Image 1 (tube, rainbow, N blue to C red):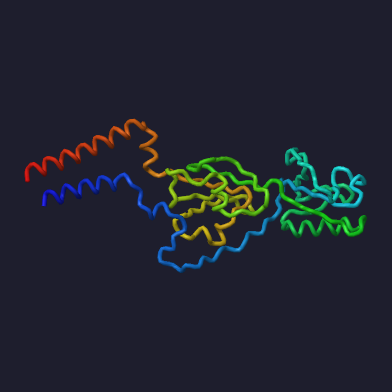
Image 2 (cartoon, rainbow, N blue to C red):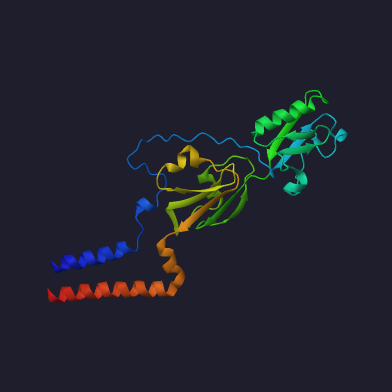
Length: 255
């Protein structure tokens, strides 16, 4: 009986330093269906202070320098967003050469592009326009490999993709407690809590990130102890193991 108790003590001591698999594995079904219904993509809308890139493609791009472009392959543009884009003013408009002020706030990218094309048709036959938001960014902080501010080039990204962009969570990241801070249309910030070990991340409200989202990955409790002093953690582990071994030896000698 004493041998059994000693063996149990060693087994429990080993388990104490391990993290349960259910707290590590992503997207567990927890007994739910195998098929995951992914949320519908969020429609990206335009707001004041956004920066938009507007390009007009014409046969003669020299006719409108600074706006029109040819259909040939474009060189790499290393200018900042402010240098190559149009800023949406506080009234929700952008001022474009030739067509003047265009209201775009509250519109989707597609709706704003159609409005711009309609304006250009008054001066140009069959204009081809591209519209892109240059200010779509997300901030990722906490226990990820590469925290920072990220600009999203394709204007559409899921939360798992954003975490992948930051190099995934570190071993100290709490996968059961991801905080998402998001502003609504009135500028108020909401806090949403996500559990990556479940499937909530595929719900429509969470699946696609939105402009200016802040993602924060909380550290697990073990991180605080590890930050105190790595040498102390190792020393404590050695002492704990020694106590367990000595206890086992004493119990075996008694038998």
